[in-house]
Amino acid sequence: MNERRYALTRRRFIMRAAGAAAGGLATGVLEGAARAATAVALGAQPPGLPARQFAWDATLARDRYGNAIAPRYDRLLFFDVKGTPTTAHARQLENALRTLERTYPWGPSGLLFTVGWGHGYFTRLLGTSSPVPPAMALSDFELPTIDDYDLCLHLACDEALRLAAVEAALVGGAPLSGASGPLHLASALVWRETRTGFVGSGLPAANQQVGGIPSDRPVPAGAPLYMGFKSGLTRNQASEDAIAIGAGPFAEGTTQQVSYMRLRLDSWYGELSDRERVARMYAPQVTPQQAARFTVDAASDPSLYGQAVRRYGVVGHAQTSARARRAGKPLILRRDFDTADGGQAGLHFVSLQRTIDDFIATRSAMNASDAQFHNPAITDTVNNGINEFIFVLKRANYIIPSRAERSFPALPGLAAALR
Image (cartoon, rainbow, N blue to C red; front, side):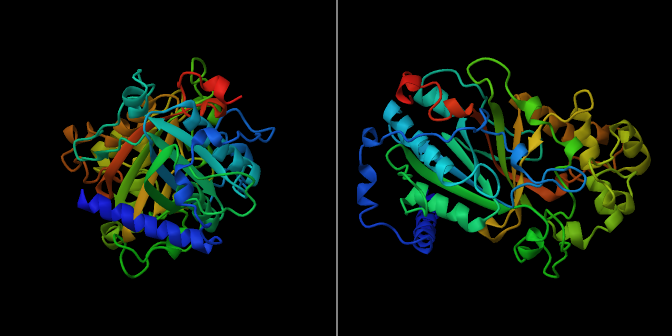
């Protein structure tokens, strides 16, 4: 309890500093946080926005092979609902989100975001069944804390300072340059935690002076992620159409899984050769030269999994995960990013999928739990993909409704309140 209270206090200090950097806290902001949400007028929504909150791909730049280039900076804000949810809460949140949409264009040059709702929001606050199950440990070698936050707001863009300014406005009530309406969420939501990070060429190398990475700066200068390899290639990602819920109250929505993983890269870089790292990331049949030439997929043929187990005594992460594909196509769309939160190398693994079962199937395939029965050189973690180098600290599941249903979904009277 004391550690949590310290973390909250420290974060509030940081948020006030970020607000001051963005232009200073407005006089009386904190005193005005208790203003009734019913006084908030619901602002107009910009036309032309996609019905799916998670429809980001059309806004992203592409590399020469057609792979989407992810936003360079991400921020996850976690909230609990303040008191009993009402339509006034919904108006407060929806108006803030519409204000963001009016302030920034939809895309990485402006702002992208999704709002996801946790299991407890439905069961504890609304007294109804949840569209997503509570998260759980998914292997014998992990023991994550299961988050029980009501709401996860995922922000992403190409400007780190913009995300800090948006957080300062939403959480601390700081003024946001160019905003045409109120953003402070304190009348409806209680902020609990923020996680930050980055992905893209040069960013991991620039942020490698942290725990879990050797001091000789081994992360390649152009690597998009700490582990040094490409991610998010077109054919190893599910499409947005494939992960969209097709019917029911959450049609045009999707499910979201959020894990916080600590990375242990001292041994990754300090004890393994290039060839050994490629074997564990992709497959033992893949050479470093082949890995460097991957353009639209990691050619880690899952049909060669048996050969990897019996002949090489090593299985690769991409190879094992690919066994969960459906008709040759991945089940999940990854929007993960590296982090230096807490001064430690880590990964915020964010995945979108039609059902949480699709994530579980993919994560279970990654465990390669059957390999050790055929070759004792492979265990749950040793010679088993990247399992030895990642440690799941936290995990949670969320439902991401359609844009029209994103503010307090399933709340009675919601549709009329947001007209």
